[in-house]
Length: 249
Length: 368
Image 1 (cartoon, each protein chain N blue to C red):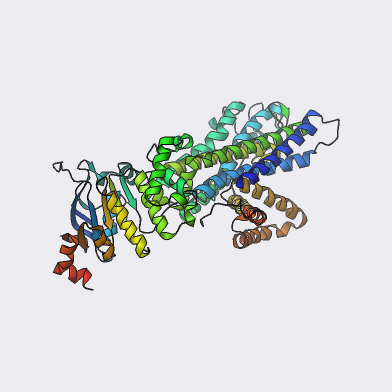
Image 2: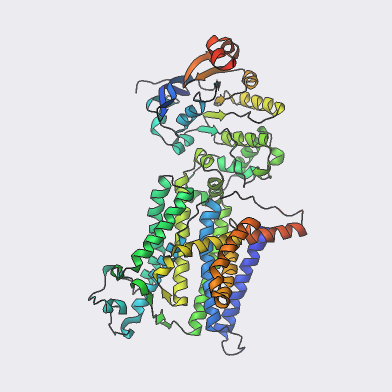
């Protein structure tokens, strides 16, 4: 493979079709290590399909996808990709409702994931500290003993982000984190995501333009399975093609 | 709070075991308080069913795998035990053949089929009680979970599995006694099988097995392993994207559960005195689901309680109103699903919740 590069995520000419419908049409995108990137686009633009390709849920019919310039994502399955450090937050908060906040975070903690070792493993006190710090970082210290099912919608989103952080991901994929959040929660989430960039490469898929603006990062605009514009928020919102397909509706 | 009920359940089983141990084994003459064979067998049967319910709850209640074929693993464990008991008959059968069981002589067979070899040894039979259901569950689960068959589809396949085994075991050519199954057992480990002291020992053994499995499964479910299972039940994709190999966990608990069911079957057969293909009937497997649903799934002791309560009702109804039993079972399932979705356990928890509001905290259950 000649595509040795330093990109945290590198995708080139990725195409996915479902029964003739091209969900991704020769999509190419490259992310620098530690970058925060927002991906916007109207419904059906291929945002979720792109995440599915990166996490191994969907196999493209053609193209290249590399993680950290080294790992061929198209040859690995979901579990292997997750263990290489790709964390994914779903659009609908998917925390384990029957467990407490702490138990949810413990599950996410890096470590041996085989059934046998999970019977015997215990978190060390060091790890407990790290867990509690992460819990504080996503603003859930007071709810640590609560059942995750009793959290508010916004808190569930944060818990899920906290779980991702404990996976120590190199690449974080965050699908519509602000969906269903109040304005204050939305801004807190934007701050949280901004603080993650640098240490992690973060991809945020979002509909909410105010939220994207608050992220103050590069924006890629997806339309019909391909990137039609890329640049700062101000740049893409001035692009006539973008206005036509998305903003101008 | 679940802890309290679990301990009460354990204590109850221990008391029953101790009572029988003291009055039937230690001092069978002195007090005259020993239970007679009818009750010993009945209690022994309930205890085996409780283990079986526990096995189903581990896969269904904790991992969301609704198996409608768990009766198959129970029956296979039972057949392995039955084969040992058949070989123990020796030349005391009706035809007096020193090697062949009666049904083989009747079919004019001249030699023992290869798969009957070794079953004269108790250790070999004990190994098979675990291995046969375990291996079947392993191969079945390997293919089903890898292809990500789940939900209703998996339930239907498990149902088909037990049905197919039933049809196969009904055939005389299979070499397991066909229609009549295996019966007329004489002794077990050298003790006469129908003696009251043997019955008492078998019942005690079933009780000890239940105690062991109750402690073992509730320990396992409190470890990280159990939490991963809950994660798979509540949100399979989340577990997978956290980096857990969902199919390995499902396979692990499915095989473990199948071996538990096999052991329950092996304890059941010497007490009941017969094993036939009827044990593979899909209806049996569905009944197990009803026990767990009535008891309350996802709490282990609830499954055990459900098995005992439903079977107490069965014993009464099949005696008093034999025609009404199936209607009763059906309405019990429907009513408990509608009015007590968390089963007997839910009622216990709610009543304690009402008595001690500040201490109560139960874990939410997701819908199947």
